[in-house]
Structure formats: C-alpha cells, structure tokens
Length: 381
Image 1: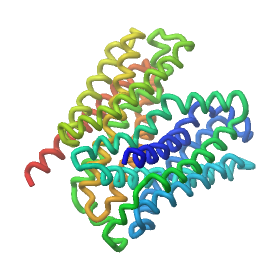
Image 2: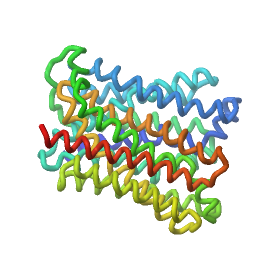
Image 3: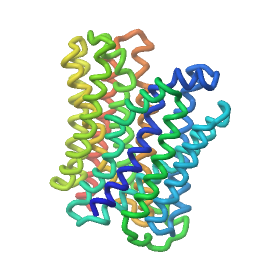
C-alpha cells in the first residue's frame, strides 16, 4: 500500500511545481511571450480558474468511473495541459493551456485523498492523505527551486517539458502501484451536489478559505516584509528553503495529529496556531530573525491543516465525495486570491508590510470561529 501512496504523491509533486513555479519565472515568461509582467501574471489566474472549473466538472464526469481509472484520466489531462503550455506559440494559446493544466488539479486531490484513505486501515487515514499531499510540500522545498534554476539557465519551456515527462512517469506508477478499489456507488448528477444542502461542508470550506487566506495575506508580501525587517536579498533563498521544510513537517505532523486527536480537533488547534503566528509576525516585524521564525511557523500551519481538512470534507460530503475532496483545493485557491488582495490593502495605503500579517490574523481568527462552530454543530447532532 505504501507504493500506492508514493505513486499518489508523485502526482501532487507535479501539480505543485506546475502551480507554484510560475511565481519565480514571471519575468522570463513575460519576455518569452512578449507581454507585460501583469499579463504574464494572468497565466497564474488562468490556472486557478481551471482548478475551480475542473473540480465540479470532473466530479460529475468521473462519478461512475472506477477511482483508479479516474486518477489516470486526470493525469492524462495534466500531461496534455503541460505539454500544450510548453509548446505554446503565443500568449493566447498559453492562457488556454494553463487553464487546461489547472482543470485536473482539484479533482486529483479529491480523488487521490479518497483512494489514500481507503487503501490503509481507518485509524491511519489522515496520515495516508498527508503522504499523498507530501508531494506538493516537497515541490515547494526542492522542485520549485530546481525548476527556477532550469528556467534561468535554459528556458522556461524546459520546466514544463520536465513536468510533462513527470506526468507520464506518474501515469505509469499510478497504473502499476495503485490498487483498483472499484468506484463509488452509482449516482446521478444531482446526487453529487446534494450534500451541499447541509451547512457542515460549507463551514469547512469557509474555514479553509479564511485560514489559508490569512496566511496568504502575509505570504504574498513576504519579500517586502523581510526587507523591512532588515533581511538582505541574499538571505531570501535560505528562508524559502526553511519555509519549504516547514511545509513538509507541517503536512507530516498534521496527518499524525489528525489520526491521534481527530481531524476536526486538529484543524482547530492549527487554526489557533495560525492566529498566534500571524500576530507574532506583526509584533516582531522589526526583527528579521523573529519575523523569519514567524513566517516559517505560519507556512508550517498552512500545510498542517491540509490532510485533516481533506479528510473532513470527504466525510461530510456523502454521495458527492469526489466533489467534497476537490472543494478543499477550490477553497485554497479562493483563499490565495483573497489573501493577496486584502493583504495588499494596508501596503497600498502606505503602511508597512507587517500590517498585512495583522489583516491575516483577523482572517484566521474568523476561520477559527467557523471551525469551532462546526465542531459544536457536529456534537449537537
């Protein structure tokens, strides 16, 4: 079963590079496609839009397909999108291919989490999901810096040729190592969305969006934040390595905590820690070492909350498990957008970047209130 989990994590590794490497190669993209930096930034938005459209689309399309076959089809879509982007002749085709590449993202996480939780004993389900998500954290730690180096030394297109080849390798490993556990019970389209009539999955989605948005209020502006704290540009790569390591540790221990304390209690503990970390960053914003420590802790929390939340949404989406699992990634991407926007407001108003962390703490605090309310509703049933 460990080989199956490893194969699933190969997929999230590729997805992680495809999504996040863009931030570090925007100038090269803009130059290569002969567009402005702002227009190149729309390629990031096109991917996020693909994530949000693809989640419900694939949930409907794959509802009666075996889970293993669904994973293979999603990986094929990933391969097509990345290959199309790698050979895009112009900006419009690049936008379209980024949208296609984003389509399988959320659905892969939803389907993969469902498979991971079912190929291990029930008491290890959260850790199994964490193993699957680990690929994305490793992408942040090692894959993205390596991808950026390839882009700088050669050409940005080689990065996506690499992700295409990686997708082919992942397809083969999924086919060989993931057991065929059949499909979900037969259902019609309407039944896939029936769970949304309950308030419980919505409480989880809003919690994810606000807590993730809170971290991204700060993280979107981490460069000016650290610069104002006194950190030189030469130290930023080291900080990013520590952030990536924190994400890996957070993902691992988030899974362990979910198995030990229950997923909902784990999410609540982590959400409270997010608030504390962001408040600490705001208070310590003039000290580079303390601020860096707060940033690493916040990033650790960001991925620690992912495995238990993924499992919770699957549990509270009966009849629409594929959609429920994918909604975590939809909420994650909406949180990114909200965080980047609201975190930038105090900076635009002339305040220091540390104030973005205070806005983030407010976001995470409201998210904490939602998970506490969720747990109260579950106990009262």
